[in-house]
Image (cartoon, rainbow, N blue to C red):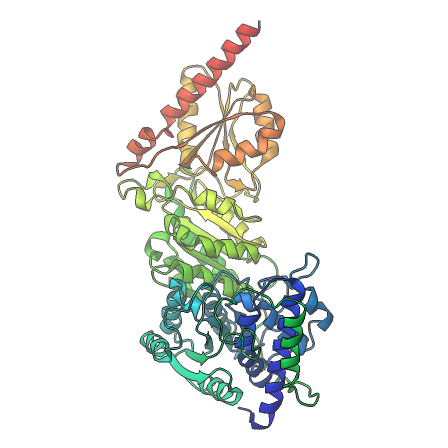
Length: 631
């Protein structure tokens, strides 16, 4: 612990300078949230320059204390703090929100001192949980701090994070709530009732401390108390005034997200703040990080399976089972690989990883938002996280997935029990929108293996690529059709049936691939040949192979998928071949399904082998009729 009493006046001066910089920047931008910056300025000044340990020249140092600005709309305050620390050029601050400047309206990892993108409220604290868990993974003493807003505290994901942090006794995590009393459109639900906040956080198992958020000495004392608290995380509840320091906006509603206009108002605000500045003083020296004496050597290169998948051709294995096997094997080969689950590990088979590597398995219970958010935090610090749950329930965390895409996070999501092929559980459990959701995220690879070997290889490929990946696994056991020598690069496909006489090409993935193979055999018995492609990489899709197949079969392409028609495999294939003038017939689930046996459901909802046969007959017949008419 360091004595801080002599630095309090200097920290108070830092807080004023942070306010000045935030007001100037938002005024220059013509947009932004100066009132939210002003309320938290004393907190940030005390934290950055009076308590945290980090190297301001190296924001990504492994042992730096970490800071997450969950109330991302206060981004100008964060940028001002890093300018005060000497990392951000002060001349960049007035370029806030400009196209050619990385000081965006809300923080993104374009900036090396930002670990995760924030601004969609309720997410930063979830990421902070993952960052704190990562400290344990690498054996570092760094502490994680996260600043949240009082309005943000209405988000359910905040309380998901609270219970996960309590479950893991994350005493290296300290959250701070800026209780300024106002949200965007009105006063917050608890206003300045500090007891209401304290009681809630204590009920979630946290050590809760209430302070005056404009008393630097009190903030420092609370931070030291948090650092000395063991066995549970700490929440510092700082009572603040929105717009503090600027009479025009101080404590007034209606100023959220509004800059002070250039001219008389801005001049008066700056005069008021500058009038509180004393003699020019430098910010107190920032304490260096507590560097580990003997850090474990970090693995390098992409994670690799040490042995080929050991499944026999013709055996029956569910892809979800193979996912668990492959994940555990990767975990043995590379300590960066971690797994998270939302209380369905015995169904997703992430429990296989848990049994092998319990210290790198994180159970969030039924809290999918906290799970994906924690995965984001882990990924930001070098882990390779695989969060998994039923594919249908990943949609609950869709906004986290969206923000992970904005941040370019290296997370590998896995969704099991996808589609109507799960059978009797009914439509609430049947993910039929997941491919569309994941394909909508720029840069996200979407993979849909059909058998155990392709699953293992695609788990390996996912771990080795940089960026977000979604792996869709299935409940039913499927036949192993590939061998250990087969390779599955992301962006590829497998041509499983092909002949010079093919009248059409059927493109499938996952469980429907086997329906396509059965349709091939049924048509062959009638004397009609069709090609079959396993489009295991739904995004990026193998455009060249698809176009070649279409050209070879009279532009007759048929997709079949256990997914709704919008946004899935059919749309991916159609988008790929449309520039070449190919129109795709898409077999997909086109109405809300119901409970039933898997085979019955595939038939009822138009994606069975017999439905594929009929589609091929119609396409070939239509093509023959057109040709006859032209003749």
